[in-house]
Length: 136
Ligand code: GDP
Image 1 (cartoon, rainbow, N blue to C red):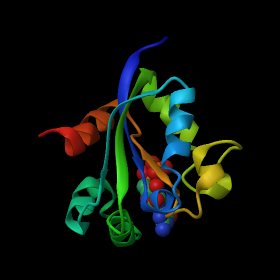
Image 2 (image 1 turned 90 degrees about the vertical axis):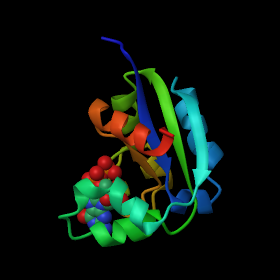
Image 3 (image 1 turned 120 degrees about the vertical axis):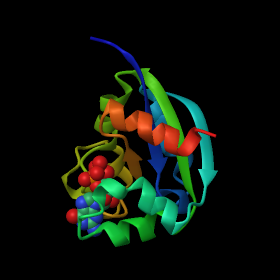
């Protein structure tokens, strides 16, 4: 069943630094996800800690927050049929080593932490994450 959804995508510092913004955006648009909102920002470590707070108990939490705030990122609202799961499929597995061919993480990811993109993992989290970056 098709349903129009919105999801949050982030192009992480490793990909921004390597000038991959347009390449990654074109993967979304070629797969019928339109970019409704889009901004390049540099968040603080405190903002990253708030964004990733579900991961607080994990051993890699500190590194994750330091990393997301280490340089500019691009945050986008993607919209289209089944946008949440479609974006996750286009991203590929968390660890680029395990990602399927032609996924963003397989093409561009460097490591499990420098894995180029973030994408909401459920419709509920998509709403929260969109609000986090785009609600005034
Ligand atoms: P995602 O939804 O595929 O991004 O993965 P998760 O929500 O499980 O994890 C969030 C982010 O934390 C991932 O994108 C990785 O950058 C990082 N991460 C996840 N697992 C590990 C790990 O075992 N070690 C490290 N260093 N980072 C991890």
